[in-house]
Image 1 (cartoon, chains in turn purple, cyan):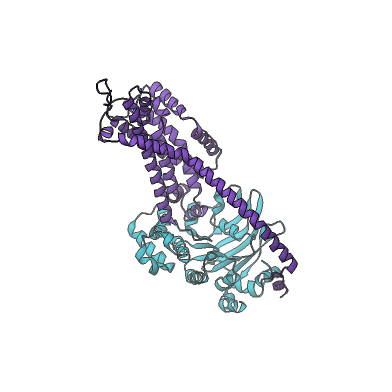
Image 2 (cartoon, each protein chain N blue to C red):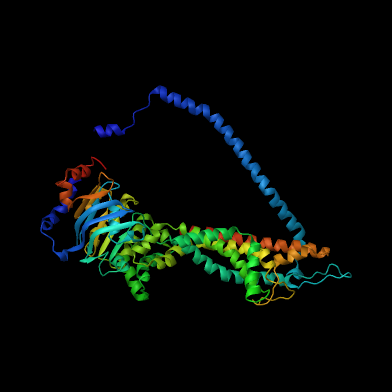
Length: 309
Length: 279
């Protein structure tokens, strides 16, 4: 019985309790005031962050939306003349070029990046930690470096010339660390209890990775891949030095292609007002594309999360 | 509590006094110790696990019960710095040095964990047959047969028969744990290790798992870690009592029939623990 008596808390003496309650009460007003001030500060910060973004989107939509007609999407670009200064044609070649570049880059970067990420997450070796540092450095490197790398290696060294493959190679190098690091993060969130469950059933470690860990982390992996693709779509520097540009609809890997960011770059410098205005349309398309990709990544991840929980 | 013990084990205590022959022993531990980076977590574990019996490992937190259990299917292998010494025999084969691969060992010594851990991305059916698939068995008719048999053995078939393709995450906690038992049984193991299998479950789900264990031991030897002394008394035939030593390493204090451990233990510390004086 003595044990039980010890376990029951003795009531505080009345004076101590009153002192505590007084202290709690006197602090309450101060805490409420501080809380209000902090909330207002957070709100102001939010508005300040949102202003440039909202202005940008208003600009894009108000100037760009009028450019988006059938000609824009289906026709090739045209050189305006003095007699018809507004005949700039469309940007179908750049749209096709960007899609081709993105698809080739994804084919190269996604499998390699995902496998690297799984390795980074599952291995404790020295090599893995070295690789992680390299990936982190590459993820922060300026994208013009990827362009130079693609130019030096594919365009010059392998003598492929300006081509879709050179551009998508540069984009793939850009995507790789992003995919690898986000995959690593997703794989690390898979609880060890699931790995142990697999091992305890006599599964070899690679089987556990393939059949248990990757499926459990798939929503994070796919989200990372989609965000990497979204980033690659809008990158200018890597394609600037590699794809060569061109005024025909084509997607063959070894030939030069055009790309939307490239057309923005050249169009913005044009002396023809109609071409400078068209650039807003291209920018709107690019932003919409990235928006759709990010949104689908989020929706997909949320749905997958719901199904698994 | 003591009344339950004497009722449930009095019939078995008589034939356990006799020396066990090798064919009656599923696993044999001799001087087993586990250390992490040179720091001993549990030591001095020497006892024989009788075939088709339930052996419980009891003791307060930190006494090394789970650490010892995880040594029995080599789950420490992937932990850097972990070292298991001493001898563990499975049907006479040394599981660390003998002619047995770690994957083969794990198909013969199954495991059920503390928290139900069905694979969340797999259906109920896929969970049950996952062990077979991991080991290269693809024949649909065999998988179907084993799935039904294992789910029946785990007393889960009736409630999931019509939703085998549903994600395992939709089951209740107790059902998930029985699914994990079915998943382990699918490989027809000789020994089933259970690490506090009911600690995350409510009393009714706990009771169902306990009932299940008493029928399962007809075909599989069970070694269970439990914090719950009533549970150890209710379900186990033999009992190993572990305690944390002065250097914070767990050690085996006593191994005997559950009846002896709870009613007439050799070591006074065992009595103190089973009477609830500490731990």
